[in-house]
Image (cartoon, rainbow, N blue to C red; front, side, top):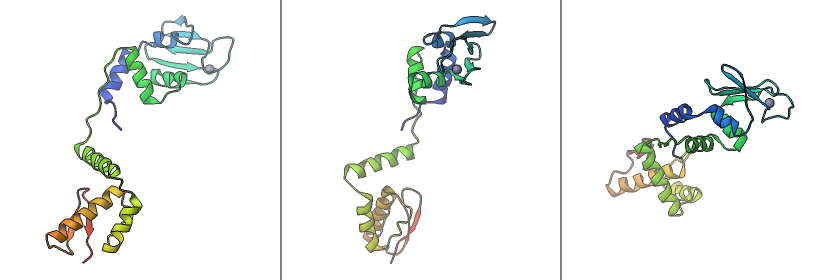
Length: 177
Ligand SMILES: [Zn+2]
C-alpha cells in the first residue's frame, strides 16, 4: 500500500487551523490567551470541560480525558483511520499530499506477486509442484516458492544440477540433486 510522505503529514499539520477545525463540531469560546473551551464532542456534558490550545493544535477534555491533535480529532469525529484523517485535512486546508516512492525491489516483488495471482497460482498448488523436486518450502510465501522453482528450472536447463542458487528474493536455497 502506498504511503504519504512524512513531509506531507508535516505540511498538513502546519496548515491546520485548530480553531476552524474544532469549530465545525464545537461552539468554542475564548477562555485565555491560548485556550478556547466548549462542550465536549466526545461525552455528554452541560458545562464545558473540553478545550483546545490553538497554538499547540491540541485538544483535551477534563471530563472524559479525550485528548489529541488534529489527526485524532478527525479520526474520532469522522470515524476514519489515520490515512482518512490525513486526506480529509489535506483537502480542507488545501495541501497536496505526496506519495512515498516505493522501494524498487519492493515494487518488483509486488508486481511479481500480482502476476502470479493473475495467473491463478495458488500457494497449495506451488507446494504440490515443489515437493517432488525436493524443495524445502518451510516458511516460504507463494512468491518465494515460485521463484525457487524458477531458479531450479534455470539451473537444470543450464546443466548445473545440485548447485546453490540465489533467488531474486536474496535467499539461498539448497537445490536437491
Ligand atoms: Zn469529554
